[in-house]
Every structure is written in structure tokens, then in C-alpha cells.
Image (cartoon, rainbow, N blue to C red; front, top):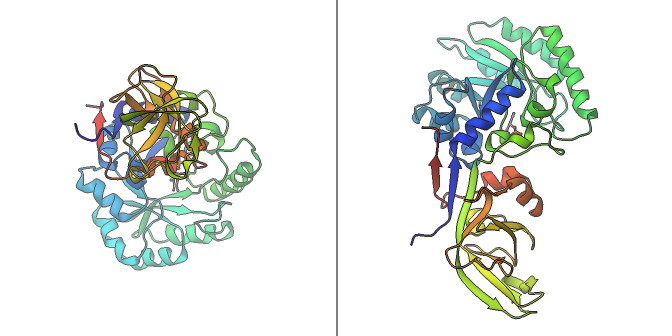
Length: 367
Ligand SMILES: *Cc1c(COP(=O)(O)O)cnc(C)c1O
């Protein structure tokens, strides 16, 4: 038998989540964010599965856009950070991409480059995230320079990113929104502001476009889930099996450093999955794991190729039993990647993007 670890990707769930994003914002178009290899799910198969639903895709860099074009994706693709050097503009034009412009040097490079057809541009404003974008007071002037250069740039949109859209506290979101509303009104600009949490929780931010990312993969991005976010369906199931079972006496340690000690005579299942596959080594004892669709817990530090799970209370569990690290078990039981992430002191994004290439992806649905 081959090593049983696999990442099952449910493309019907991806489509369900995309529709949910779209339905939350019926007056916006949703650009499907599929950067970082579609958050670890495989950019080309995910884009193909969404092609008839999503009018555009978004990635972080030219290389990711090239992968999509090579995979046969013809829809518009937005470069969320624009180009990293002026020399990339030729490829942006050749591949028919849209791009963010977030810095003076990018703006100058675009104005110095003469494409055969103008390039659609999203002007990025730093409304409070303090990462990328023009300071608000410079945006009007940037906008004017682009409007005055219709051979270089077309289809201008105002783009920004929220720092706290996932949080319950509305203050900082509102602060950013007030600033953006004023700018958009002054420039009469169509906007693209909302990430997943804003798409789900802040209708005021919905613009001409929204940019849902992690929600497409079924992770709930909200600090407090709402009616819509509870309907998200997991796309990735990280699935493996028990490859060995051992019985240990009370008091015996398991794994490196003996972090976990059996509180009673225990049965331990050894699972083919470790940090060398992307399962987070920060997972604490007690991190939930499904064995035969039943919840049990990690027992002992995660190794590179294996981890250990307490199956003392699962009489049926044995060598070959199904193990789900996150996602949906065969019996329908769901273990959300968000819950696992909380036990690893991280977020779903790092777990999903962290599944390493040695884990085969297997695709289902959407055909
Ligand atoms: C990644 C990203 C998104 C998507 O964010 P999610 O939280 O995954 O929805 C949206 N906009 C920008 C600029 C991004 O970099």
C-alpha cells in the first residue's frame, strides 16, 4: 500500500463557497483570490473549477499568473501587488493582466511604458493597514495622472485592504471605511475593498468588486461566525490512516521529549502525517483529529513523517483506520481547519498554504 496521506480537494465545495461569497454581495463582482497556489489547493484546478462562475482571478505575482495562463485560464487576472520591476510590464501586457499600482515607482514605470492597449489598473490606497498603497492625501493626484494617460491605463478602480475586518469591534474598520468612502466619492471611483471577512460581515464595504480569498476554501474568517460563514464548506480534507497501533501503560511517555504521558493504560495510533507534510509542529496535545469520523486527540509532539493519536476510547480504531487531520470524514463529520489552527496558535491560512508538495492532491467534483 502506498503512503496513505492525501489532500482531497472538493471542487464542488469550492463552487458552493464562491456562490456564497457572490450571494453575500449581489451588487458586486467577486474576483476569486487564488494566490499561493489557491491557498495550497492547486491554482489551475481551482481556477478551472470556477471559470464559469468567476469573472476574474487574483494572484500575488506574475509567475502565478503565468501558471494560470499556461493552465489554459483565459479570464482576467489581477496582480494584487502589481509588478515587482518595470521589466515585468511587457509580460503583464502580453498575458492580458490587470494590476494594482501601489507606489510612485510603479506609477512612473507604467507611465513610461507604452502598451499596445492600455492596462486595467487598480490604484491601491493605504487606508490604515499600513502595508501597501499610496497615502490617502496622494491618491487624488495619482488618479489624475492616470486619467491623463489613457494610452497607458484604463478601467481605473480604487483598491484598499482592511486590517480588522475579521474582528467584532467595528471602530478601525469604520475608520478605514470613512476615509475610503470620501475618496471614492471625490474621485467618482469604482472600488474593490472587501476581503473574505468584509465580504461576509461588512456590506458597507462591498464595491464594484470584492476579493474573497480564504472563505472560498471553506475557512471561516470571522472572529464571531455569522449565518453566512456557518454555511461555508471545507474544500480540503487532509486524510491519512493509522499505520501502527501500540498499547502503553499508564505513565509512559509518547514521542520526542515525552511531552505526552499516558494518564491511564492507553492505545496509541501512529498516523502517516507529520510536519514534513505541512502539519504544524506547534500542535498541542489535545489538538482534535478524526479517527473513523470520531473526534479524538493528538498525543505527543508531531514528528517529521508521523504523529500519534490517542485511540483508547475508539474500540474500532486499528491499522488502516481513516484519519482526518482537517476536513470531512467519510461519515460526514467535519473537523474545521480553523479549529485545528487555534490549537497550533496560528490561522487556517498557514495550515492550508503549508501543505507541502509531497502530499498528493486528489480532485473531486466540478466536472
Ligand atoms: C490575500 C488577499 C485577499 C484575500 O484575503 P482573504 O482574507 O483570504 O479573503 C484580498 N486582498 C488582498 C490584497 C490580498 O492580498
